[in-house]
Image (cartoon, rainbow, N blue to C red; front, side, top):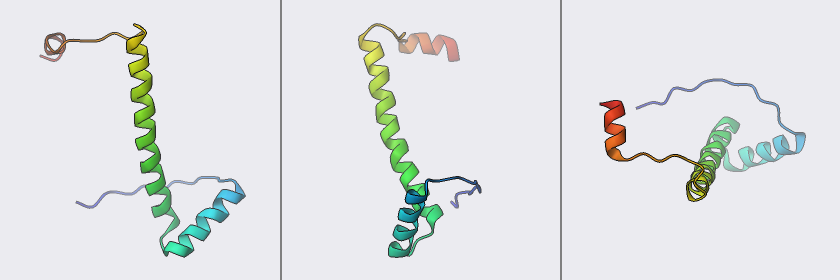
Length: 76
């Protein structure tokens, strides 16, 4: 399946754009491809940070948990 792409405009610090351009030339890949890969890796890292944060709140008793039967009642 072909993934749909969306065009966006971003502003980067000059040094970051220079590094992106250098990597793009070295790997012969489009900047958008490199940015997409970098964002995917970063989102994976964020998923871990979010999970750690939620677990910390759970351990501190600051978040509510639900049993499977509770969820089944809500969603049917």
